[in-house]
Length: 571
Image (cartoon, rainbow, N blue to C red; front, side):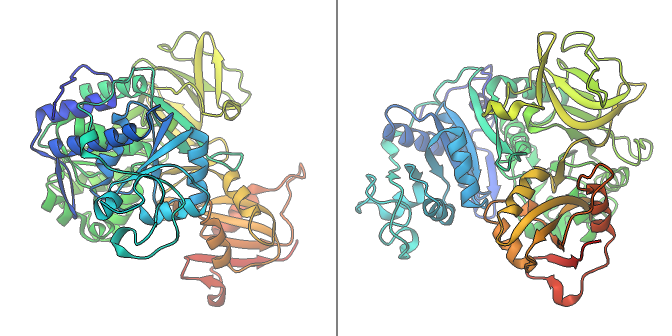
């Protein structure tokens, strides 16, 4: 193996190589299934990337990486980046139809799948995917048999584990140790490093291309702000297709630290898990605070190994910040903010326990990163910036718009740009849809959404996408989705017209197209939607109804799916 140290390389593979140089035989990732050192992770990624490229001589336009959070997911994702082409992280648990739309939208023409991906591959094949796939577990278990050259796909013959499954539909790419790359394929700063998908108002996900230049600016700022090193152990709570997961990976790997993804069972006693693994860096949505509290884990001093605690994806309450700081007294607590379109996070606020009250009991989102311009748009949209990306427009409250080096140039489909991106004074701006207030010190305070997007367990979703999916359910004529506060986060409720259906049936249909995290929890049938004075659907009244409606009768509660239903006649 040839080890190349690219300490000045402005790409994500370059950050991993920096960690490799610092901690070659140290643990890069540790899970319940095993540990990979930096050297082992590097070698596996080189082998996977080389095998893929040798089987696609012309080179793929984009490579999809189908991953969970097992130990094999990490070399799989890194291998995608090592190929030098655009990498598209894909979540195993997403509905196959949704994943297939992402594959088609991003131009993925080859897949690398981790060792736990066989069920997802079978579902993709059943949904019509016909991509060549590199699935190392298949190669290792069926070496020397028929089908590795592409005559069989996932599930061909006896398949993985010896279980007879459906006939193959996608060609295999064999894993070849002799094809391993000597080093990652070079990429340019302007090349797209990865594509992530957000919810779309048209009912389909929107692709966000993020370049190596975007991530380089981001991680250089983080390197200057934080003192991460080889002794740090990162919690790695986020899925690898979620932008905050990139923070975990490349803050850890850029410093020679270790990733330790907590399994769901760890939340029963997070202090014990943190102590066992020596966690020093925590990053999660604020919803995790409420969960740890319910499990009795926010005892004063309970997580004394933590040095840094970060929260993003949802509004963070002052109470949650104070309670977490008391449980982790040696930890600095920061609230991070940033849409996917602005590369992971684009602002931060360092919390002062017991003193920093914030606005409306919420922690501020802080100051926007250096090199970016801030514009607060009035409701009429006429407020204009006073200068370039380094200057702020003089407005105290409005919709937050940002320009600067972390901003993506636009969505994969330019038609999705309308209403989100605009050019002014020679700069590209992004409308976040978030209403903020700027105080006398220049600190930004989050006031709420100004559009139809909501955060559900840290996942940003367009209500219109949920509504579009609900309208496809059997018997539904029309649907309206609203957000309902629940346990420190929000849940979605659906009001629908048409034929009344059992909530379990509606939830089951919606899981075919929506991620589990955003499948609505409550379903209410109406003969007709209430209208406001403009004769439009009164969403505010529906939100009040969803939040204040009494609990449904037991026979109308779908406990297996965690859904509830009420039915109302027209008023």
